[in-house]
Length: 129
Image 1 (cartoon, rainbow, N blue to C red):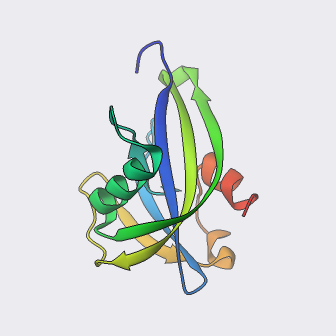
Image 2: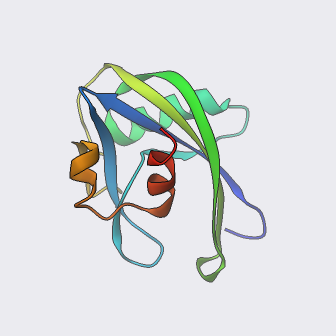
């Protein structure tokens, strides 16, 4: 990644009391569940990036309902430093179609989340909502 932090967005999509999470391979090689999102492109607002990333990663067209907070993820061992801006969102249309880099995506209730390996930033987010 280099010598600068990367600006990233993530949108937590809620549907019928459950939240959409995606499984991906992390820098350390482990599979973990994350809040879907990705890098903000030049000239793109944070909200625009979140809407685009969710469409690319999951196939859903979403509506941002609220900005929650931001979180820094710093892992110097993996040359990884991101600033993640988290939003809450709801589905406007579409159906689940996974981007190839994701291993899976599912809706989980808070109770079900206790049984899966959440990335640190997702745990942090669920303490705030």
